[in-house]
Length: 233
Image (cartoon, rainbow, N blue to C red; front, side, top):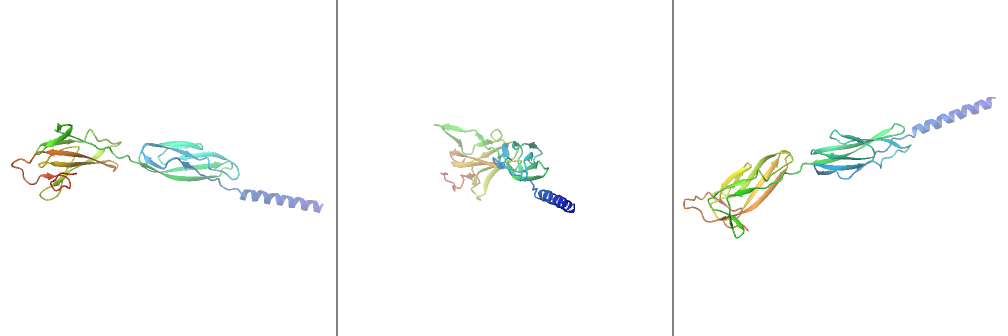
């Protein structure tokens, strides 16, 4: 009788140890995922794949995604579109059938697209298919219809060449500006635009100036870009 009781107690103890060992061996699932891209100009869509996640003691029963911009989704395979520029943290939380959970994260860089830049100028003449302007003529440069951005353009900076008397650059600002060229030559007109997110784009166009300075021209007129008064090549 005593032997049977001892065997029963020993069996119970072994079952308890085995059960406890099983509990101790329970481990958290592993959250793993990939993304089709981690950086691009907005708007862009990322496909996330969480099927690499696994649970050692069973199966994954829940996939919860957050994308860093307030949006969320569920399931092993999801897609998300980033609409605003910034740096975001995409996260995946997986839960196994025992209720254990873990998470993984990844940084997504949503880039601000730069503005587009361009301009037109008037008046201009055409000779055998070549456009040019005349010395001492007032030229209007207009960028308003040729520049665009997903937000707003906050700065227009113009460059027209160097001043002959002191070598300083001739510049202007604003979407529409006027300028006069007193000396003949080929000038590089450069427009730089900046948007409200700090994006910068530059557009340049060569301008053919023909003729000569007026009789009363002073020597403070501009000369072609880096040409010392000659024609730029």
